[in-house]
Length: 78
Image (cartoon, rainbow, N blue to C red; front, side):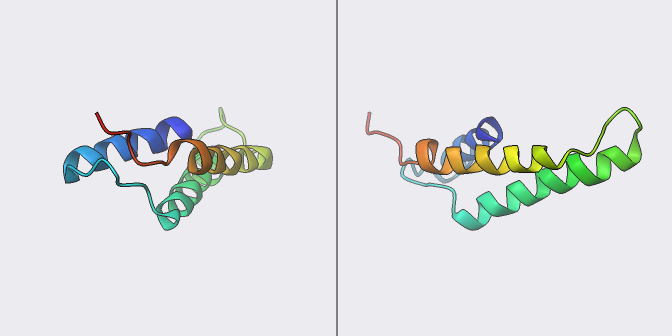
């Protein structure tokens, strides 16, 4: 989650030319829900190679919280 969210943050900052932009909490929750549903519900039902693991959902949530507290900050001035 930190990698995915950092990429989203970089892209958004480049598109808006706003280095102080941070991802809103609603975007973080939406991303966590989307990744959880896709990788823990849809993909395991689509292919037998993948398994549903509820602890992965917890890991996605912890990764999202880690991003929120440590990485989702305005960029330092150059």
